[in-house]
Image 1 (tube, rainbow, N blue to C red):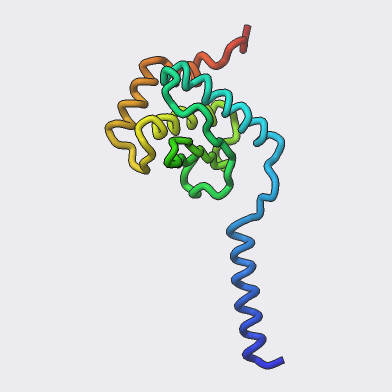
Image 2: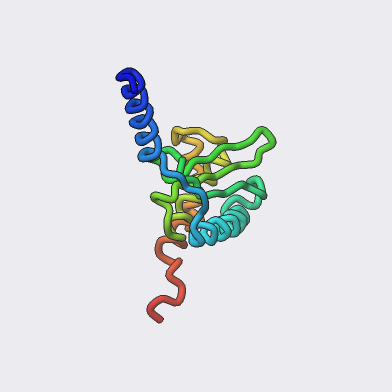
Length: 148
């Protein structure tokens, strides 16, 4: 085999190894992720009624997505017809409480229009649901029955 061919094979192998190392293949969700996705769909509906007076889009796409930007817990996109897709990073969002708090954050993005920055409209939304004790319910009151 010629030296040039060997070099090209070595470079291709290095690139392939880098891709496989950096972007692991996630062919199927774990059972826990599927349960969490199902629970998040219900939580979205409940939170929409409780904190947004049912005004948000009623049928979002909610998925655990290992390809969400590495330093984000979740991301939200809204289609032109208004349907949001909320993608949770399974690296960070592994428990229900964290998922619910992150969902409230993302729901404010849905309400005010998706944007990467957290401007005054988004902050006002977060303050509105905070005044309705949304975060207290998840952080403090969500321990129903524990220790009784």
